[in-house]
Image 1 (cartoon, rainbow, N blue to C red):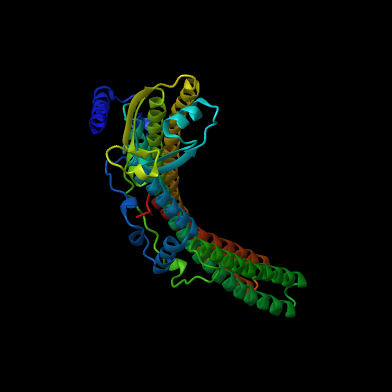
Image 2 (image 1 turned 45 degrees about the vertical axis):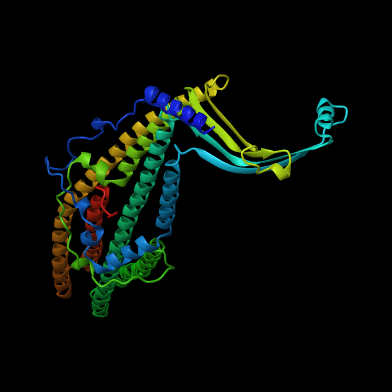
Length: 472
């Protein structure tokens, strides 16, 4: 029996070696999916990028680092992604055993009571003088499929690509979480700054209202002036609870990101103290496939699709399977393990070709081919989105800087205008409306300046994330 098994296995290996071939050709990621350079970026062949910097070195504010540390460790979505990676790893580990024969141990016992008038019953009675027969067997069975057409090999490739893809999905999620935490923190600082501006403006309104009341007592203005001054004061006062509400909501959002219940967030620095970085190292578009997790995930999805095409194509061809079974067998329990008389063994090998189910198998192959074409298009789309996001971030960084320059000059002018308006109003050379208008314009401009600063900081974070930074 051992010799027979050896001969059949040797024959199967020989056939596999002789006719094994790649039944389907893989499609590579399209090289023309990338432009030569990003829009709004100077032409450069430098491949270095700020995305290569670890997030702990990109962000320098200790409060942000503390928040991101908590998010990376405790964010529930990120922990779910980690479990998906673990599941994919189990599947890949299991796929490595595809070429290993299936071996099962068995122990069987049965009894049969044929009819006395049956052929079996009559013969049984004549042969052993009994009306029933027992059967006892124990042994091992083996089943093995030769990987002639690369089906098992493609299963392993697909499982490995799926495992890597789950890793990239987790990385992509982390880049978004890192960016969202930093955006939330910068938004908090902006709201703090705007709250200070609103309170300062309220004090300024108080001062102006007092002056107008003195003018009213002197008969120089009407009650209309007092009413309009009071209305503008209430407008500034209304901003304070609105901004406090937005601060609490933003803190709650950061709590969710960091995996904690709603609470206040520490801010040891003011918005005005933060320096806006001007990052120029962006690399070349083709490097996005190695740095940006979602683009890498789309590339791996194509590899999974290639493997599925190979698997379904292999199903169209004959499958070579070898089965073997051996052990001890006896119709009497006392002779069950009487060696070698009770030994038995069977070995079989054969090719199986789909026939009636060929249409279904071919349909599965056609679907796999269509899915692969979808994967190519998805890869192209992921590159388009990535390149567009980088270009958007670049133009924001550039134009927000220009806007800030003009807005700073505007605020400076309005601050001087308020001083002049107050001086002229006290001396009766300006109307109260001019003072109120100047104060309203300054409030709006200072609020806009704080928002512009926040947008600049966020634009740098967006550029960092768009280039693939944040998962290291």
